[in-house]
Image (tube, rainbow, N blue to C red; front, top):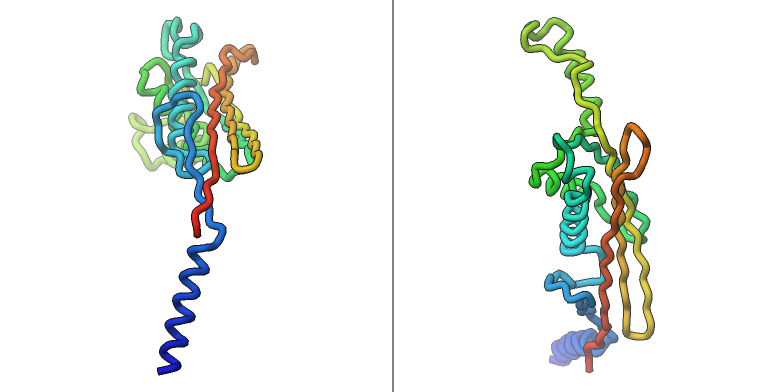
Length: 200
């Protein structure tokens, strides 16, 4: 009987200790009236990526280099530098950027990452395996007109229970022939959080 009471006492004590500890959760809001609610923590989120890509794609497609082009310019995406302290899948960001631009129909893309695969396929097709009528070879690809790259920065400020997280995503489009940056823009995202203690 005494042994059972001791077990119950230890279990209850553990529960009370866990409940009365200095637990905290963070709930935030965008301070620029963005309606998205994906603010479960203070890290770079899906909503941040969507907001940044949406606005930057709108900016790029309205620029004269794309809007006034006689034919859809050919663009090659290189990379998005991550200068934040977080682990962010920048490939997902550039992929979304490319997809949204292609949906617009004003831009065409060449895939830098596919070059090795294409060179291997050229070698295979020219080995005599495929017919002369269908084989492809080097020399027929379309060269890129522009290179698209960018950078993601962040600043974190905290005072007491208040915390502000600032992100800035900058994208640049460079003319491959002249080396001139023909378009550049950035999207700022600022989120405010307040820590609240939960306990007894």
